[in-house]
Image 1 (cartoon, rainbow, N blue to C red):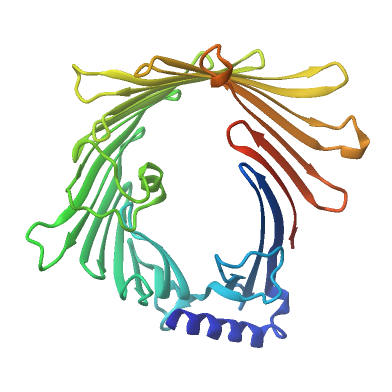
Image 2 (spheres, rainbow, N blue to C red):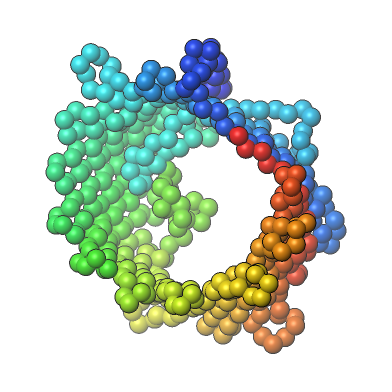
Length: 425
């Protein structure tokens, strides 16, 4: 309710100021509708639609800014190409201003509404409504603070962060108070021209818990030559650490927000280099007990790549999990048709299976009625047996009237046909 009140108030302020500040308005959005027909064991017709509106406003020599994002209220039970009882809701809204709080004071950015704070690699907080003050510079010290209102899933949340920079050394620390008290610290320094070291930590403190959950890491990046980068680090995680507020880098490793790891601490090392036109990358992660070796190059129009994943529970028990290798090539056939051809192989030693995937795609401009038709097909198999052969066909076409048509057929899955339109402004 509080976030809705904030959004409505911001919208009202923006509407009232539109006649005066029309020159600083940025309006964009899109309306999309789609009709999908699936044929598997039975035929299903699935209509869908979407509306999104973004309104931005700048005033006072761009020192004051505001934005509102409006979209359709989600209703899983309602399906329509374009609902007749369309309900829009505020997704997020904000208003912010640059300037000092007193004459002669340090400048800062103050925001009311939707917040997004990056208070460290283990403290990235999004989807909160409230107020924040950021980038207040006091000599070499940068101060940030926020207060987030409670939402349906969480209670009120507040925090402060300070960063101190001296030449090539930066140290930062944050305190975030919610259901638990969280202390975040991180630092990095350029010790030499080509050497950067750093570290980060987050500790959760709760009165009822005897042992505090924490995560900490240290890393170093060294570039001894222009074509070689070496990195290494160490990380430690307690059993009960809940990966809330993690950064996009962590999300890429996580499975639905849960860290799937083999060890709670370990080393991470790797290198990346370019040798004679070949890009080579090698990484080892002791926490996840995996090593990855990869190489990629372009040779006379062919893109060649290979990647091997190795399970490393210990140095005496290394085993290849999988090896992938592929080649891609663009070429032209008689008639002026350009083809994108590809081959991908994957070998899994555990089941001694080598899977081959052959694919080709093109955009047809030789038939005037369907100019721009994009088609793609691929076949995969691991034995010379029809039962193991899989194939997929795709086609996409944008008609002169703006309707997008799509077709997909996959063996053992079925056929899907869709048609829809999207208008962006």
